[in-house]
Each structure stands twice: as C-alpha cells, then as structure tokens.
Length: 190
Ligand code: ADP
Image 1 (cartoon, rainbow, N blue to C red):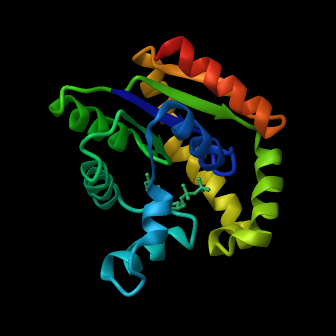
Image 2: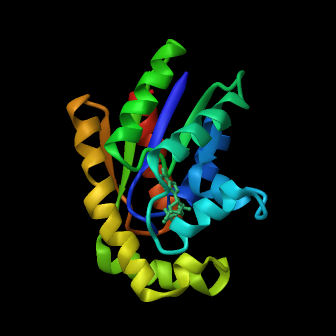
C-alpha cells in the first residue's frame, strides 16, 4: 500500500494537490476537514466539530481519530490513501501508525508543502471569497488557525523526520509546477 500524508499549514494547497495526486496514483483521498464539513449538520457530532472548526481550533484528538479510522474502513480495497489534514497533532500521528500497523501497513512518506505565513494569509483571504467557510472569512480566525498550526501541528514534522519519512516540497509557484514537484517526490520514494 502507498500511504501518503500530505502535510502543511492551512492554505498550503493540500486539498487541491491531493485531488490530482489521487487520480495519478490510484489512491483514495481522505480529508478530515471535508469529512467534518460533510457530516449531517443536524447531528450532535457535526455540531460538536463545528464548535471547534468555526473558531479555527482543532477538533479533539479522540473524536478526530475515530472519524478517520471509520473513513479508512470504508475503503478496504484501496491501493493506498492520501491523508490530507490528518495527522494534525503528534497524538494523531502515533494513532495513525498504530492503526496502520494493525493492518500490516505503514506510512510511506510525509510530503510537506512548504509555504510561508504571509502567502498563506493572502491565499486564505482569497479562498474566503468563494469557499463559504466561516473559518476563512475572518482574519482573526485565519490567524488563529496559523497559530494553532505552529503550536500543535508543526511538531508533527519532527515525528516524520525522526522516521526518515519527511520530504519537503516548495509550495510556492503555479499549481502545475507544484504538482510536478510532488509527483517527482512520490515517484522517488514510493
Ligand atoms: P485547512 O484549510 O485549514 O487545512 P481543513 O479543511 O483541513 O482546513 O480543516 C478545517 C477544520 O477542521 C480545522 O481547522 C479543524 O477545526 C478541523 N480539522 C480538520 N482536520 C483535523 C484534525 N486532523 N484534527 C483536528 N481538527 C481537524
């Protein structure tokens, strides 16, 4: 199995690039952000998740990990998975490793889209114009998401570096060039 974590700050382009990479390599794309937004909005779980995400905070690990595991279970015959927006904490990264090892599988690589903060702020503000997402609309919520990323998610890079699985890719430039860089990085490692 090819299991790729696509890693990077909010607005780095993880979702956009994952959609193309999944087609190219025949993988399933699982975005925890999309899963949360796709829940029945009247359900308790959706309301709970929204109470965190609308402020730009992380949904608690326990909930997120169980959501992720049930999403993976929906694709028993997958050739592999692109994990987008997960893991976002070291606890989630550890949970993913033990979940995969129970299936005699493992993460192949963590592909990190590297984009600096000023560029992220511009991209998220632009995305707000058409995404309709409340967490994109407000500069203070955008800033909180960047702060949460730096405090809670950036340490996940060290987790994968320690395993020799971290591959950084320049996330600045046009989408096509970035896509080609990612394809090259995957072909080298997978
Ligand atoms: P972004 O564009 O910020 O990368 P996502 O669509 O990946 O956004 O996620 C939107 C929101 O969903 C996050 O701000 C967070 O509240 C919640 N979320 C998504 N994935 C996770 C996760 N792995 N752990 C905790 N919360 C998550």
